[in-house]
Image (cartoon, rainbow, N blue to C red; front, side):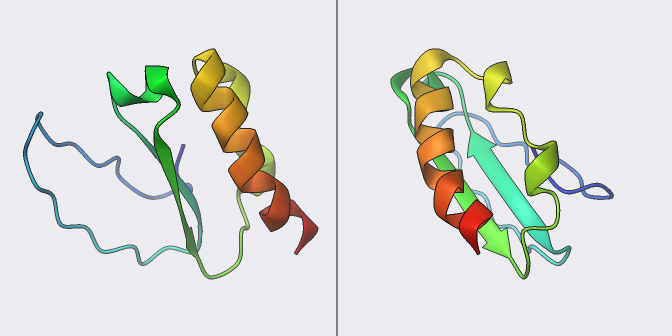
Length: 77
């Protein structure tokens, strides 16, 4: 779940990754097996222009609940 025109991040288990976020929008970072435990991250770059395109229903239950919680304040702004 990333803004249009960007590439997904890809890292192996226990591998550090460095990323530069240049395109405005909301980036959702969800990795296996962590997302099954509800461990996800949201990075906001500029305005949340792609927030209506994010579909929490594509995630496992715990991650979906966490994402909905994280996105709620962004939808109000």
